[in-house]
Amino acid sequence: MINISKTKKRPSFDELLSVALENGFTNEFVEDLRRLARLDKLQE
Image 1 (spheres, rainbow, N blue to C red):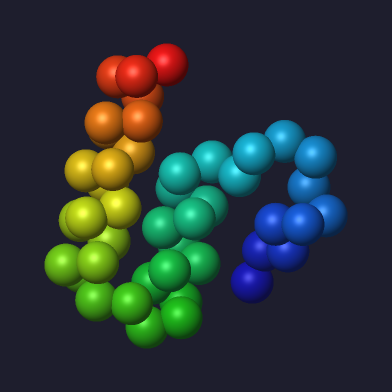
Image 2 (cartoon, rainbow, N blue to C red):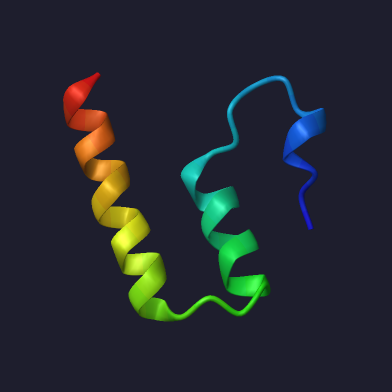
């Protein structure tokens, strides 16, 4: 698992997704994260 606190840069979305999947999150949860990430990018 990636230790996010040790990395200075924000983890990439793919890194977060892989951590979520490794920890047994459902695909629905991952899809919600993707939707939120897209909204986040639009607001930047």
